[in-house]
Image (cartoon, rainbow, N blue to C red; front, side):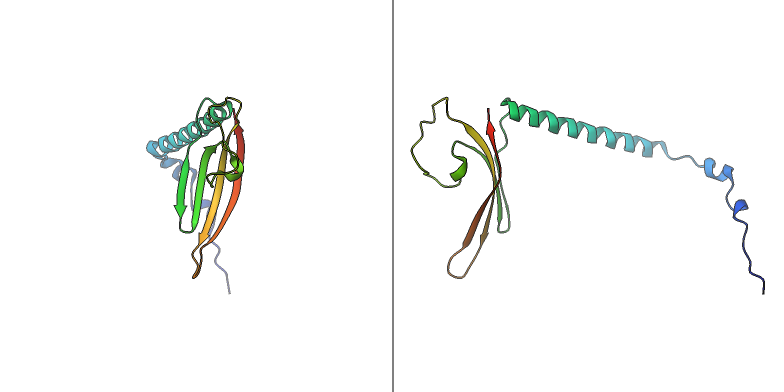
Length: 128
């Protein structure tokens, strides 16, 4: 019994491969996407550098995702930024006070008797 094996060298010729060039709009979309990605990376780097030098105020973020709460704020008391009052009263006009940017993750699970609340400090950075 003979096995038929087609000759694949004749199946696709070099003229067929180069006969249909890619559409120009596809290349334009790829270049535009690459340029947009570079612009986003540069903007994020400049924004981060501006925040570290104190030229740009960091964003205040309060977002809720079900039982998860993401809170990013600027504070004078980073260890107890979510409770008020906390510790000694502060003279907020004192130029020697250090400001901090903190990001907390608060998880609140509802329970039958009392809600379970846990706070996690994810990030803390002293601002200039």
